[in-house]
Image (cartoon, rainbow, N blue to C red; front, side, top):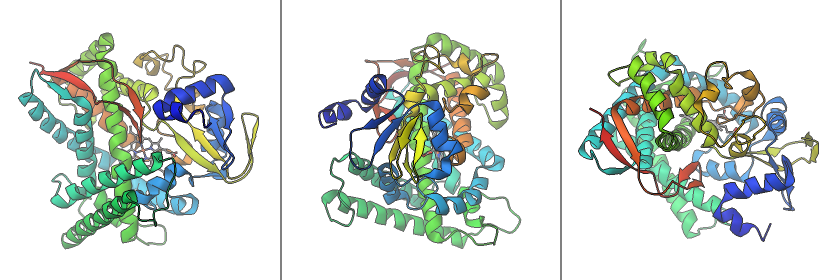
Length: 441
Ligand code: HEM
């Protein structure tokens, strides 16, 4: 392991792939504490996430570090706290909210196109643009369409805190937050700013409560109205934790998927042509809305296939709460289980010619979106089982609408060398994604 530290830092994805190639689908790393396993066998993954999910918790370095920012939000909350919250939060992602999200996508895309009109023919960073769009959409979905100064401050503070957390997670010697190292001081300040921004948002919302009988204006209204069976509402701290969680979980993930979709389309012109044909036929004006989605199966398939090749959540971790057997290997209690959608999605047994970008895997007769592969957990960009991504439908809707809107209205031509994938919180291109943008006539 010590000899491998350089290789892990240089290219974690290649390191994990090499480990699996040498040692198989369920392997143990020679680390004394905690006992650490890389699990890439689809059945074993399914056991951890779905069939024996209650025997696994989220007290892992990945999630405890993230929880420094997101607190007891849905993504990081463990077991009992999570069980109480999930049914209370879930309705915030129902159809009415998704229709609002579709409107926010349109606004964000119109703004982006206005910016790109000024850069027509020039090179732009598509990765930066997708981050911008995704942040705008999640911000507007949470706080309403006119993003106030407070909302902007909140998003900025969240990203600053997240940045520190990523640096902490990558540091070889994790220092407890109580010790005032420079990084911890920056983190404490960022979290204090975050809390102040949430307080300001909530104070503002208290001055203009939702009028009786009116539909919720945004997810914040839904969170504030949410209650469990005995009628109790989320506390201020719980609302804060969910808001921050949605920004963290719902922004870079979507942006990463979209960035890689543009890369894959640009390097597979035939697929780009097929996608464009579909969009031009369904919405000739190039402004698809919620109602058009059902008629854009290829657009959805392009996104599905992108999520297979570049799953933004490239690792999912769990802590075993009891001994278990995974793929024939005895796993003790308190072990760290590392699962990698990146590797699972490249297993040639489930995905013939796995490196090839082929959206038709998810279409028609061959549609692997169908039962077997998904049910076997050989496809898990959004996780699986009870902790499946609560924002999945929102992400798929947002992703498809952004792809369809832009493919109809702009040409993006790759420039420079192919992007190198770097696994951070999500998988990002090392140096952005420079492309020449041309508005279509
Ligand atoms: C392409 C975009 C997205 C991807 C790839 C993605 C991926 C994931 C994955 C893999 C998990 C499960 C983690 C685990 O089991 O440990 C998850 C959970 C979660 N995601 Fe997403 N996500 C995306 C978009 C979103 C959006 C848009 C939101 C909200 C605005 C969101 C909010 C959440 C939350 C709250 C959880 C925790 C659910 C729970 O444990 O009950 N995600 N996501």
